[in-house]
Amino acid sequence: MRVISDITEMTSFSRKIIAAGKTIGFVPTMGYLHAGHLSLVERAKKECDIIILSIFVNPAQFGPKEDLAAYPRDLMRDLKLLKPLKVDIVFNPQAKEMYPSGCKTFVNIDGDLTQKLCGAFRPIHFKGVLTVVAKLLNIVLPHKAYFGEKDAQQCVVIKKMCKDLKFPVKIITLPTIREKDGLAMSSRNTYLTTEERKSAPMIYKTLLMAEKMIDDGELRGKKVITAMKKKLKSMKNAEIQYISIVNSDTLEDRANISGEIIIALALKLGKTRLIDNIVMSV
Image (tube, rainbow, N blue to C red; front, side, top):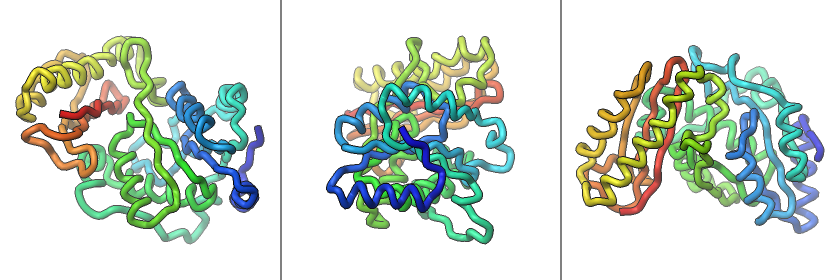
């Protein structure tokens, strides 16, 4: 396993791999890896010849009062986790190279796709996400890139960007990996206090309740959302940001539930912002 920090060196390596007729699978991360990230690597290994994983805490996707400084970082820990998986390259660029002095170009998608759900509470977030993913795709030149469905809105907007800008890459999204009690794995779970961690599984239980209501024939979105709010209010120190039922491709709200949908929610548990979702077909 080789660690590359230089952008030019990374692109040069990828071009040689492509010239040799091999395929590149890419897993972009912000580090502090968990089993969810590792599942993306395992899938990539089944489908591609060379695996590149990036570790870069992207400053452009954090708002001024968010957790950029506090976000967990431990490169040595991450490399130990990756070694048994035989990742070929860990790309670990520096912010000053990704965003050099005078950098004024950013990527965004106009409209609701980036402005609703998480975008309503994190107004610059998806502009930062799309910009860094565009940069990483241009640097790494992968054939396939792998993302987790816990960040469902992120998956939708990245697919849209790649389609609109004609990136020659296939975006693969994989199911959320969970703790034994159902909590979606996230690097931010480390922020939770002991008491908050005990109550956090209620998020997934609420999503499962909503899924069952729909499976049992309740197709009125407002009714399902009301029941979810009631259940989540039993959580101590939780502040609901949104609960939405949306089309899985367009993120349009589904007042009358039909087709493939995402049941999505975000809340703050103490100081920690948690998101989760379930994708289902009706």
